[in-house]
Image (tube, rainbow, N blue to C red):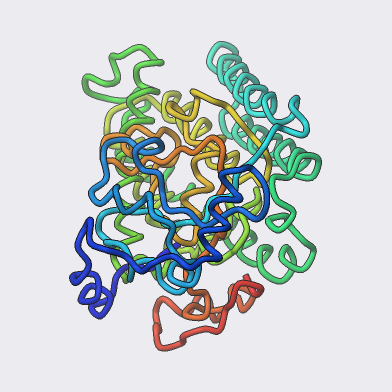
Length: 390
């Protein structure tokens, strides 16, 4: 994931005009592009085909058809393309037929139907929402973890013992503690400030209407925070922790800086769920759906859901948010706001060539837990991360 632009980077980019001539591609790159078009050989580096994969037109889209050298893009794609135009200059890797169609096409529908069935049962039978939420979260993690092992998308993105123990577990443990404390705080605020049955006009809507509103409102606030966290340096230093792994698998979902969790899980959720007037049951159902989407979206598994990608954020779209050279897909559960603001990307036949940070050496090594936590408060502690470290 590209860091927010610096003053120097902005000066460089100001000299590059949409549609201006670009560095000529090398002969090797041109041969690689020809090989990809023929369906053989090493995938060629290609610029983002905005016209077919994003909503709306992208200024400078004529540039996207050129073959740009690997060295140019890997060194700093932003030096060759307008940074503020939202261009994607990732090296897309084509994917072929599903190796395990039942898992590829059946996992997400199964999880979605099972989750909806449990929500219906909770509403009609009065089950304890806290227990239901915990059991659903645990069940979702178990299913997604098993499917990842049976049907991985890329072996390079798989969880390893070293990554789990030396990088992920400290963040996961801290996230569990922080989220529990934030949940207690949110419940305290809701109990003392919000009537049990909700309030205002929204409380009079049918439950399904309240749930839909909660999803739309929460994702709008999440989108605003998330996009800001990718463009404002102070917030990016917190949020970059989540992008420091150069892989995406289900446990990476919990790799966050605690301050990032405070803003995204506490402030956003409290504003959307407690202060809009919706009922606690509607808030519960919306949170369960958001949790499902956030967990599934981090799977390292070949998951294909077709048209559902335009309704719910999932694996196919969120992995491009974690691309090292791409910006987009900032939504959490539904892609509505990405579609509205032109940042939605969906490529059904490609996956990103590289995940994580564009230059990991400029960030702390995420395996150094305490240093990574301290870095946002002391930016002078520049790390020596590196791709392998992440």
